[in-house]
Length: 283
Ligand code: PDD
Image 1 (cartoon, rainbow, N blue to C red):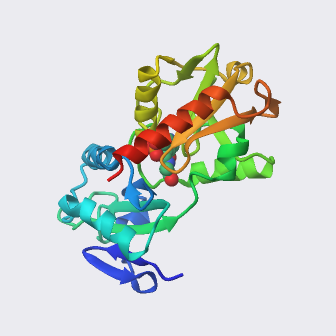
Image 2: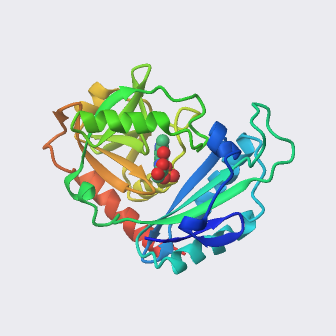
């Protein structure tokens, strides 16, 4: 595979695209990212992702990359040049290149790197069968609302899940589920959808915002509050949301099967609505 990727204003074959060893993204994880999904060769939730990117940059006093206003065009160009039908566009902005120092450099030029990934989302086996999760302690930093590339702990959590024969991990802090390692977490009890409310504790998922809006429009009851693993294990269903998984059912938590141990109707319905509405709004 030799994709065309985008690095600092240039489209290049991936094996010729480079970033400096002094890039602060590499040295300090001083970088933020977004993942925009692609369906039928079109972008999903583009405006929401760019708005969150702008917020992440601003929370970290990081300058916008010089191509910020061209991001839609660059996304579309990467989709076209790599003939992506289904998958996503990964985008990362770093504070730029400077000699190693904890202090932010004064006038570094932000680095912008983007590339495409092909992936089956609609027909993913996880969507049909559901996923098994384990709970692990949430040991991430306290500003999870900023989408930084500090992803070592989420990677560790996914490795712990894999070692335990599960698919993913739900993170738990002070006895309550914060979110999944790379997704937002929900349970369903007596028809009610329960998910943690927004704060610095979790990423403000773009998929979450849309799914909760669609749920309300479909007259489903949504309760934004904390829940424990024990409450989740006693729930009728559970599911996760993210750009790369849409709505995906959770069928087992720490070895306890939920309800019938199969994907539930609420998650199924929300997934259908999400796909239908996202397709309509794709650009
Ligand atoms: N992950 N919570 C965390 C910790 C995440 O990393 C993500 C996204 C989400 C869901 O956000 P959204 O609906 O905006 O994708 C929640 C992306 C997809 C990733 O890291 O690949």
